[in-house]
Length: 416
Image 1 (cartoon, rainbow, N blue to C red):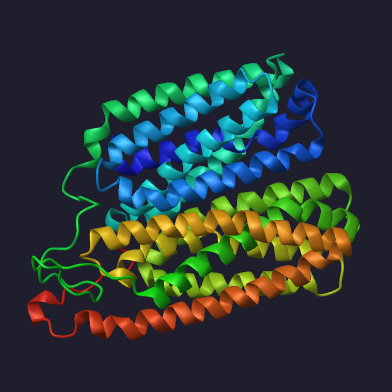
Image 2 (cartoon, rainbow, N blue to C red):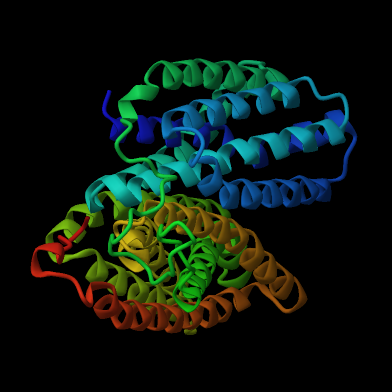
């Protein structure tokens, strides 16, 4: 099985249980005698663990292969689900949430780092679309299990068993990822890459292009926060804010996630044809337009259209940001690319938690209609950060190629 299909399988597998905690929490909290708000504690522990795991993946990949990390990360997710299935108290569930996030963070970062080296625009977008597919199927599976009397403990146990089987499959196919990539290796002497002095033995030492990397991390955080906001708060916005019936608002939110899946499936081939940067810029502009539609006063269908536009436009942004990581840090420096891709995943985890939290606090203090203006403000920040990122990338590219012989200036193909 090629690495691309293994990557898609990994995302589908971890998304299945990852998207069901909110659905299972009502019965979990009653069984564990916890208030509704206790779920927030689990989410905080999970986000912190995911950030730590994502940031450390670059270092880990210098010691073990992508195949082994994928297998071990999946097994860790399986163990976490098994622990949660048997949890007698909330603190045990919290430990399970930490283990789950550590495993998922490692899987997510490793796959994004590998994709930054080996996949094209179509493959990267389909890889991320696979997570959306798993997140769509997961609630349906849980609903069916609960309807057949499984309960939340048996549901977690079933997911744990399924992930254990997938981990064994990944372990047996670990060699399919190849050994030539060597993600943890530094660039050899004289290889074009980010500016850096040599060490005492004459080897190149990578130095962070701080402004460039920082802008990429901020961009990642804002983008995932804007992407998550309508999915989390869209139902409340459409019902309490725009007066849409509950049934229609639920369908609208479902369609929002469907647009994310469709956007990643469609824009991957487009990016391969016209170039990743053009699709990235169009996506950022589309998010801004969708937020404007959600902000302007008018009938509810205008706000729904805005949500759909945001879902479609935001879909390819993070996958293509991952795809273009090597261009920003130097295509020949595997360690720099891997570390930066891992930190982008960590930043996205922070943004996906922090920005929706801010939205929720403001909506609770004012009213549900403030979601539109908040998304517009964050979208403007996203647009400005992307402009800075593009400027720094373009400014750095001549320095990256300066002083090289013509045969060393290998062109970078669109979508690679």
